[in-house]
Length: 168
Image (cartoon, rainbow, N blue to C red; front, side, top):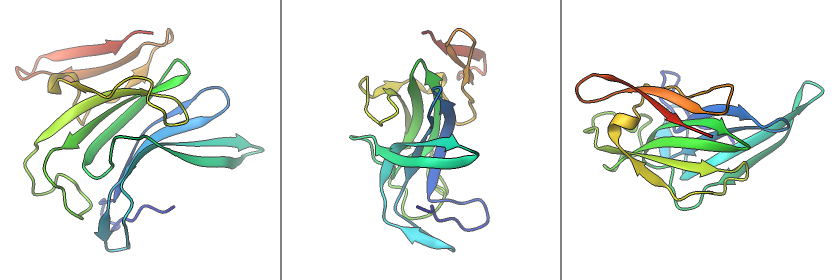
């Protein structure tokens, strides 16, 4: 499926964190109902997209919906490999974001951050947990260290740099 955009940087979807478990590639995505210059969609999804590569070709493409989370108000999305699974961190704007491409455009930044452990089939292995805003921001990139620890940086309200990690 094609996620509509407008050619100017606006899109009806978000993606986050390409991961590889030794056989299958995966990333988390969200799609919201949206109308833009080059198309529209009524999809309202949060999920895991998977694919494999054989002989330099993408094969076995699949979408796996994460139940209980809508894509409509997700404004940011990141994921990293966590063992054989995916650690997903995302922000949801509590305001109705409408049908535009940028879910935060013209709205107050009234968002909350969440974290969930997903398998490559989109099944939640933990409950979706709300996390403090100083634990995650839209500018954070997640990295996986050699021992499997997921790590990223964040600034707190006093602009102090924090190093956040989720150990294996």
